[in-house]
Length: 323
Image (tube, rainbow, N blue to C red; front, side, top):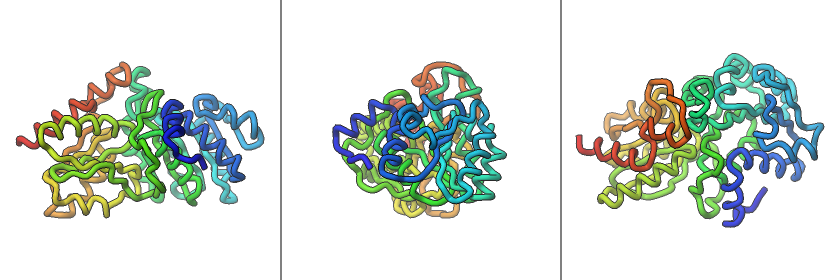
């Protein structure tokens, strides 16, 4: 496993999360781990070029047939061998929904499905590829673990941890070509189901996941200048949700969720569902994609149209606090 020195952390950031995917797959195979990798004609975008060249017997390209890929992965994993399967997140979550439910949910096959370029990064490709709904679709599948890492280091560790656990996992990769650097130093062990406290604060608590956590941290700088103390939680595991971390936030005036996902059924929905059981819980402000299809444009345009840039997040929070 790669040592998380400052040099390697910068290296992973420059690679982008898809490059990180290719790196961790190669590293795991070189350390003797037994697994297969499948792609729906996206071997190069998945970062599998070196892996494919060095271990051709461990790589399968099923072509542009995402649903079939899940079935092939289920067969390869029938003896418990883990299988990484990759495609664009929109197709992984929606086009493959039936196969995912049957093979990964009901049959609990040891498949690690990577939803690439999730969230709003594919805004330029229009609503057919832009994907702010995948968590909502998949949270309802029993027994499915859902991960949403925020930067290069966490992506590396999340994929490694997913491969070491038994059972189906969906890993949601967000962000543009360069991965943000949330953790400038090695944050230690990555534990599925355990959130990470990025920042301490007393007034409000911001809970985020994925690459947009970088925008949330920009908002925190603006809020701190206005005298608002902010805690920041990296909720990298959407399911199972770290409810213990949520229990520690009940003294805050406001809990804010920030995600490149619909405000319906995603991280914000999961947090609100949990807090709805506690009459003493703080109010929850859910920031994410509104219940409309996105307009085409750049990644930054996609963030702006849903109010997910740092200044917009800060403005939304201040508006809520004034109510």
